[in-house]
Length: 140
Ligand code: DAT
Ligand code: MG
Image (cartoon, protein in one colour):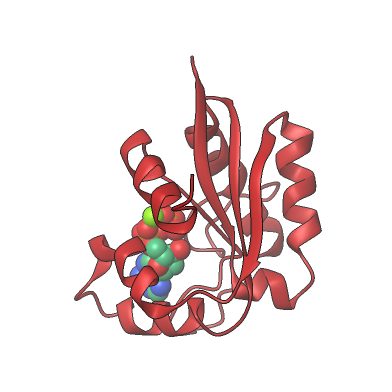
């Protein structure tokens, strides 16, 4: 158990649907701290860095298009084991399979879209968290 930081994104679907506050509420209710926060329409070059691991997959282009389709909220959170903990709050990648009670299970939609509009991103390891925070908050 250790104090970690994670990069959370409330994706453009969450922003459009007015769910940013609901996601932040759940993060704070869990006991995690908001360390940095900005609203921005992501540019494709940064998204390519962020999603480098998925380049070449069938959902990659639709994913980058979707993620750059409008404002999103980028948040650095901090707390004990918050990397794994936030992924647990987020739920499974596919909203249809995500457990009720999780952000994606309660709020995410999956209606045969080219890319899953699953409300949030959360870093999946300490290495990705450090890398992703560097991409979206390069000024530190
Ligand atoms: P996660 O966001 O749970 O870490 P991931 O890193 O595997 O999931 O994928 C990144 C995003 O890409 C995911 O949030 C939604 C989209 N995605 C992943 N797999 C997909 C698939 N099979 N079909 C459509 N979109 C997908
Ligand atoms: Mg991922």
